Structure formats: structure tokens, C-alpha cells
Length: 548
Image (cartoon, rainbow, N blue to C red):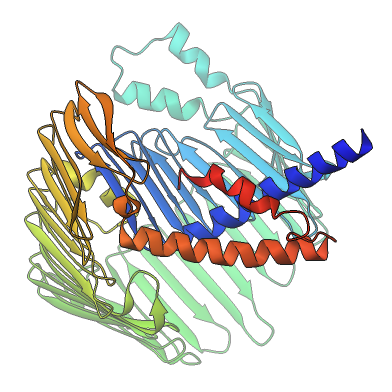
């Protein structure tokens, strides 16, 4: 019995290891692609996989990241890495996020705004729960360690004084009032505060901080050696900001007049009818700014950070911030240039509908290569290509933004009258009339489908498949055999043809077999097994992989 259990255990290990190694090696091959009209497609390439069930579900997965979505952005979208897993749904109103710390501790947060907020962790201090309209506790939200609101009475207004229409100013006011709690407590380090009908009445204090307000009448916020602010009726405001070598003061009588100055005289600024007319300077930063009136005339210069702004709206404008530059002649022409640590980019937009984008990378990017170009006349067409041989064309191109792995992959085929793609390894694809006709081809293969009329496929100069009317009738030449299909019933007519798999597939499989053999031999040698002495049990298991 012990010998039998030992043998079963070893064979189980063999099967598990073979599955893991063969699956991992098999995934690192050339591009595989399958589709059914425009509603389904699946693709695998160099360790990355994607599947799309339009418009209901999308999944992209590679070695380090997984992205899933359903009816973007309405139902849900999810992003997952080795340490993080977050998803959101219902236009972002519901979602969760989990994060794995380096010490193995997991933080989990869930929220369904405004009804439920929940947090869980092995650390008790990170656990919380809030249920609207009763209340509870939030932790790590809104720049506070802990927030505890209680009782949201605004909800009863819908019952006692129901609004006449679902979409009205009264309904909007009721919704806002329903988010105001009767009582709230705050904590942030040693700072503790309470509020009644937040944000109207609040009192908070710590060893260096003191805050009190009764809006709209009066408010005072103080932090030792940092700031001292006063507000009366929200329109009269006075602020002091304390620095080691200077004192800055600001006075505002909104919106009529405002002034900012410093004790040293380094800073001086003023505004009339804010925000339309303002001017000022900061000698230390080499800063000067004038708006007469904003946003029509904006002039600004700064040495630290490096800023240069000249805007005369709607005629033209230039804006430079450190390594980013923008220039426009409204509405005819916009340029945006940026020097980032890993790449440089230039975007040109004319009449808001003609786009020309280009990027240059210091190291090759997985998607963009080293030099990438994108040209679009919205909503007619777009052209995209890089220096690695990738090229794509779409007519029409309706989306007013770029998102090749999300919105474009999910929705673009629904309006693509013509689409063409060429990949760096030589494969090409052509789709016509919402993929009613679609073909892909390369050096040794060709596949075409006209849904639901016919499917045709050949590889290595041999016919592999020809079927009509959703495979009701057809001929198939596969590794398992040659078949005729009549009314979807397969009839075997000959022996299998190894060429039923494409040359690229067989090359991948042979390489995977070779590498798996080497790795498995190493594994069993380390574990004290001699495959040749035991009759090479791996070869007995190999037959289970015909589905490859």
C-alpha cells in the first residue's frame, strides 16, 4: 500500500509539473487569433492573452497585469497586479480595492456610495464600517485617519415633502441634504474634531492646531508656526502664513478686492473683481503674473519652477511648464510637447478634429516601439504605426480619445467599416463592413470568414478548413484526422495530418516539448528520480496534451 501511494504521489507530481511547464512554455510563442464576426475574439501573444465578448466582457492579461471590463464604464472595470486588485462599477459609484503590503498584510476597502463603506485588515486599527443613513466610521479617507459621521436625516424629506419630478432643483437639494450628517467626529494623528451638521459647525483641536467655525458667520483656523486664518460671512477673509524667514499675509473681500503681501517685501499681489483682474510678483522665485482680464489675457513668468505663459484668448497662446510646452491658435491649432524621463512626445491638433501624435522612447516600449505615430481625422479614420513594423488603419474612428486596450478594443468594431492591421512579425488582418468579412494571413497561412456564409483556412499550401452556413457543411484537415461535416455531424474520411496545425504552431510546440523535457528531467534528478530507469513516465503522460 505504501509503495502504491508513493507511486501515485510521484505520478501526480509528474502531471502537475508537466501541466505547469508546458502551459507556461506554450504561452511564450507567436500570435494566435480567433474570432466570430465582431462579437467575439481571442488572442494570445508572447505571454499576453485577451478575450472580448462584445459589448459585454473584455479581459486583457499579461505577466504582470490583468484588466477586465463589462459595458465600460457602466457595469464594471477591474485592474489587478501581483500586489493590488481594484474594481469599480456603476459609473464608479461602487468598487473595492485590496493591497498586499511587503510584510504580507492585506488591506481591503469596499464602497457603494453613499450606502456602504467597509474596510478590513489584520490590523484592528484599519477595520471600519459605515452604513448610510445610520452612520459609522471611515478610515484613511478624505485626508483624515478616521472620520465618524452619524445619522443623515435629509432622507426623510423625500417622504414628508416629495418632489414633483425626479429631475428638479428640489430633488437635487434633497440629495445634497441627505449627505449631511447630524454629528461627525474626525481624527488625524493628535488632532481631534467634532462637527454638527457638517460642514456648518465644527470644533477641532490638537497640541499645535485649533479650529472653530459656524458658517456662514465666522471661522478661525490656526496651526502653530504655520498659519492663522479668519473668515467672516465667507466674503471677508484674512490669512497669515508663517515661514522661517518671512511672514505672508492675505486679505480678501470677495469678490471685490484682494491683496497679498509679505513682511520682507518679497511678495506683492492684488486682485479686483476676482478672478478676472489680478497682478503680482515673487522676487525669490523670479515670479511675475498678470491677468487683465482672466481668462482672456494671462501673462506669467517664473524661474523656479520654470514657467512662461502668454495667453491672449481666443486668438493665441503659449505656455511652458518645466519640460512641457503648449501653443494654440484657437480653435484652429494646438501643439503640446513634453520631455519626460523615458520619452519625448509631440501632439498636434487642428480644428479639434485633426490629430497628429508622435512619441520617441529612449528604450523600446512593448506597444509603441521606439518611434510611434498616430494620425486621425475625427470621426472618419485613424492611422497608427511605429518603427517596429506595426501598422493599423480604421474607418470609421468615432471615439474622441485613445484607449487601445479598453474602449477601443471593446467598442471600435461596431462602427469600423474598414480596418487593417499589420504586425511586426508579418501577420496581417483585414475587416470590412463591421467584420462581416474578415481575414488574417501571413507567410504560411490564410484564414477568411464571411459570417455566417463561409469559413476558409489553409496553411503550408494545404487546405485546412472550408465550411458554409455556420459549419453546417464543411471539410476539415486537422492533426486528429480529416473530416466531412454534414448537418454539423462530423464524418472521418482519412488519417490525421500533422500539418493540420500551422507551421508556427508546430514550431512552438516542438520548442515547448524540448524545453519541458529538459526542465522535467532536471526536476526529477533533483528529487532523486531516474526517468530512463523508470521507463520515462513522462512519455506515458505526454498523450494528454493532444488538445494543444
